[in-house]
Each structure stands twice: as C-alpha cells, then as structure tokens.
Length: 409
Image 1 (cartoon, rainbow, N blue to C red):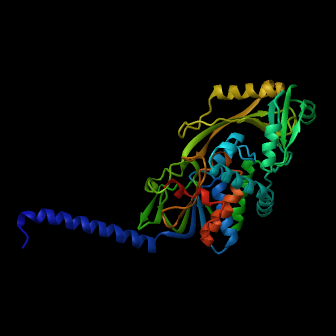
Image 2 (image 1 turned 90 degrees about the vertical axis):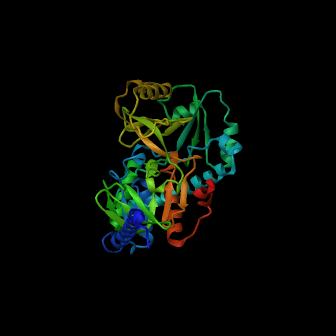
Image 3 (image 1 turned 135 degrees about the vertical axis):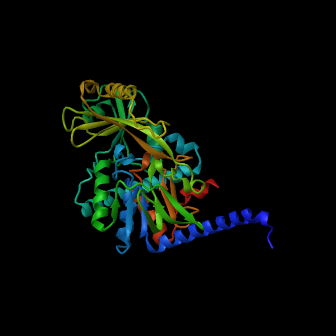
C-alpha cells in the first residue's frame, strides 16, 4: 500500500508519463495519418538548393520532391553575387603553404568549373531561359613594374590557362583602363549572370515536377531516435523520407539542429551597380586582390566586394560604396562620372574553417550542403552531383569526402 502522503508525488509522476506518452503517440499519429509526406524535402532556395532538387528529380522523376524557401527563391546570397567562375577563396599563398584541404578544395572548384558550360546548356534547355554565360575570361590586374613570372608559373602548375598582358596589350583589350597597368588574362575563367541562373534553376525545377514552396519558412524539426520525423512550417507540419539542408547563412539557425551540425557564419558582402556609357564599355570581369568589377550584358557594372562579420545585417554603408567607387576610378578614370543604379548587400554562408559542409550528418535522414562562402555559384554543378550521389546511391564521392562535417570530430 502506498502511503497517503505520497499520493501527490505518484500522481505527478503518472501525469508526466501519461503526457509524454500522449505526445509521442500524437506525433506518431500525426506523422502517419495527417502530415503531408514527401520523398525528399530541400530546405533553402538558393542556387545550391535549387540545383540539388533539380538533380534529384532529373535522376528519378518518380520522386516526390519539395523545396522550401523563407522568401522567394534565389533572393539571398545567390542574388547578391556577381557570378565569376573561379576559386576566389584561394591564393598563391594558400595553395603553397597551407594544409592539404586547400588543394582538395581547389580540385573541387576546378572540377565544378569544368562542368559549368555543359551544365548551363542543360539548365537552359529545360528552362528555356538564358543564364548569360560569358567566355571572354577574367583579368587579374597588376600595377606596372610587377613581375608576372612567379604567378604565371604557379598558374601553369595548377593547369589554369593564362597569358600575360603588357601595358599596350591591356590597352588593346580594355582601352578605358588608365595607363600604367598590366594584367594576367585568365582565358578560361568565365562568368554567369547569377540572378538569371537562379531564375533558370527555379524554372527547371518547376518544369521537372519539383514543388516549390516560397514564403514557407521552416521553423524547426522534430527529431526522434536520430531521425527527423517532421518539419514545422509556418502553419503546418510536413514529413519527408529525407531532408537536404541548403539554407545558406541561415542553416544553423534551427534550434533542434544545434549540436548536430557545425555553425554557419553569415559573411556580409556589399556591391554597387553603376551604369556604363555603353554596353561594351568594359569587356572583362576584372579584379585586384578581392576588389572586383564585372560588366553585365545590359550595360551595368557591378563593383565590390567586402567580407564582413556583421551578423544578419544586410544594410549597405555609404563609406563602403564610396571606397568602391574610388578604387574603380583608379583603374577606370571615367567611372567617377557614372550614375549609381543600385547597391545591395548579401550574406555568404561561411563555415568554421572556410570550406563547405557537404554530405551526411549525425541525423540519419539529413544531408547538408552549405558553407560555400565565396564559391556558391561556382560550386553549384558539382555540389548537386555529389549530393545526389550520396542521397540516391549512398555513395560518398572522393571530392566530397574532405568536406564531410565529421572532419570536426
């Protein structure tokens, strides 16, 4: 017999166990009978998430795939980029002196770069939209008197096609640059109009049967026994057999994922768009260190960019835009008179070691694809390919292996 004075304690324990049991049964009941179910749910509608959804659906048209985005697809880092297709994270110093992962990352970037033209042809063919792929190459600018020999040797070692442009050569290529500059012409480093790529990927997904759910923010996940049971959307719960986390800078903002995935760090970049006096006034995308300017087919010139730890603040700053204009005027003097059309900032998804997070996670039905930092556009084709391989074939591509999140254990 239980002592009467212990009844309140036993009643509390009983009610607690009963409540837990009811919650578990309710979760199972809702999952089985009332939740909208998909084969695969992709979280994040930037170019990475869109490309993964399209790749999965292309490989198996019978898959029921949905993609969630908290806003409109392609309107975060994918929108804010400039679309230069070269590894911007890496420098001669990185590859010569740093750890082997730098070289492995470079190989990942080069592999994706080599896939890009055929990949764009495929996306454009399905979507019917142009991505404005430009193949005139990219210029790495130097002041006069700087010897190019060590840089050219390094590029040759990496098998990157390049040629030296003397002052007179550069004036032939870019007559509106000031005198006294030289450049290395990276002849096979191309560019794409990133906003049009995002739009084409969206259209390709829809054409292939992916369900796009814009303005549907995933709030969190219900994780039970090491698997996601369902995702909490704004006004409902949805369930999927497998989930892909590709939410860019916001990927580690889900409370239930804390401890399962590494932190993703927002890295702000600011850009200003100027109106050139003619459509081909500047021919080549060009850069000095991390300052660059990129011409568009419509006569805009995009100028930037910064790397800032500003949290989730996407405001531009007048002093930064002013500095961009000054840097540009030092190379293209006439630009000081050009009209400013727009200015914006985007949040790149950074990682703890500046390399992507790719592949399986400790959660059995969750794959991660984020942390691409400056290289999200460039890495779109290869990320879609190796993530699809991992999900559908349970295969870890050698190109993916160095970037598994298990590297942080």
